[in-house]
Image (tube, rainbow, N blue to C red):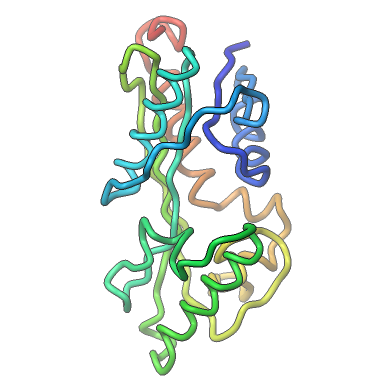
Length: 209
């Protein structure tokens, strides 16, 4: 089994990534299982840049191979906002639930009056695996397409899930079961692509160590 440190303490993300990587032979640990490391400033202007920054920071600090991701929501009518600022869109400090609620309210206010056809949006996830010596082992990107609903619906998921409406199923992401959501999510797509790239390394994952 290959151990892979996932640079997050978000239990939702950890469960989703474990569901993909553990059957493929990885033991995935979150940051809660490790010593405290000062969180890096995520100041890149792309999801890929932030994922790379975090993967390198934690790999070097903890001395082992590290997976990191950066994800968020892009809304076409807002020129791609909130983008890399998705988690702190409303500028509210506090717990995750409070921040999610404030972010959703701000997004709905920003889209007030925007017609349904123009409310296209997508979740984006960029993932990166880095080694302690600074080597970028593999990177990948996934998306999850939908529309921004007029009001939040559903209690599954987190973040903007209650607002991402999926026309093909007539429900928001937060109205899907966890299994159905994970099967089509941006994180699922990115991690599965990453897994293929890790497997494609010469000699397998161990050869890149």
